[in-house]
Length: 403
Image (cartoon, rainbow, N blue to C red):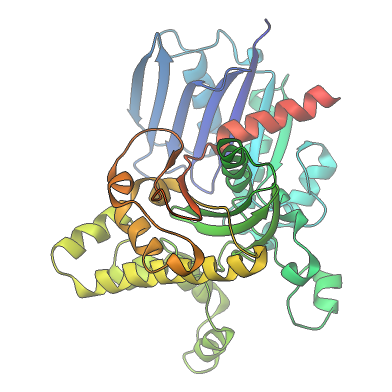
């Protein structure tokens, strides 16, 4: 059977993450992370799985720009000992994660000059993400010249939202002229974990509340595999409390900071995207650090955890209304999959909507998809490890096999 070498790339503003798959195998043959691109103190981590063993190469070297980073990745992919390929030309497909596709880029697509122009147009809607993705495409086109370049959009899964969920209550021309609406994000993750949950439940019509909790956090109300509502909005800033993002905030707070405190738009963007959330509340964005502070008796850290969990509970209540009840709630993402304390806080006093957590199952750390509710719980409580890279790979293969 022919194996297709498919490289998945997630290119950020100062980083490149990649995984190489030999499809149809679901296990990557290697993965890598290039950090601090364009900054001092660059770090490169490259992992290869050979004969069931993981071999890691770590390099500490400055990486000047994205092109240097991508060429370094190509070298590691083909280097004797660390490499999984003989030549970069063996890469047949490159799948790119793109955060914002707007209303025009609504499904996985082969990248053309027209697609690149649309991604560029959306820079103002995803200034932290789309410019880095765009650089990743340009560089991948130069380094993997023979490969088919494919874009997979975080926003695409949420294109099934009805107008009553995606429109804002502002004059209509802001939507018609500027595309100001709810787009939603983490779509690749929500699509992957909800599909796994439907298989696990044996119910293709399942009503699912999916919670992707990491440094970025979002929730989605999903019925029969279709997203009906989601917590992020025009950009990934809205909704839940996140690592460094504020989530829901009264727009008047922004007006006050502009009018009374002299804030510029740049300073506001930095405040709300990079200095708020758990970082703003506790001085730390990593939940493990905040859990340590709680164990030391830090009251602000305790409050931050409560606030974080409370916001999630409010959305569960809202999405039970959207779906007319739920068959399952899903925890995924780094925090959702690994933070037992948070899962316990989210499920506490939620028996009114049929959620009952089994404390012992919640504390266990078995791999794979697992059920952590009590036997009598009306709603299944599932931990579903996400795999956005594999979902991107699957979508690339589906697209190209359709052609």
